[in-house]
Length: 69
Image (cartoon, rainbow, N blue to C red; front, side, top):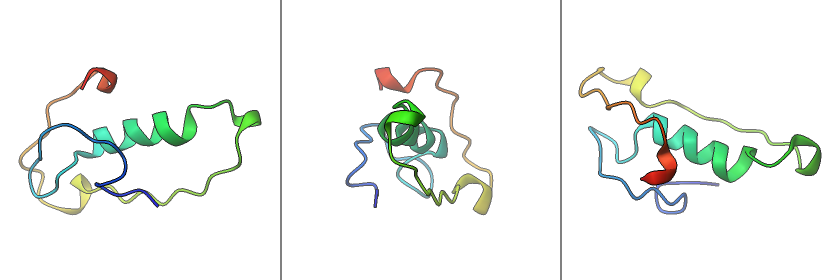
């Protein structure tokens, strides 16, 4: 299980939650899905997005490359 304390997010806290959805998705891709599908075990991922379950303010700025954060 991954949570805010274990996924390695080093950016600033954002809005009502600490980690923006875009950062969570980028970390999920890098940590769990980047390996070639034929070389990794299948994954079952439940990923509730936070931004779609609350008021849409504040909006996170778009970050094109999360590897530099």
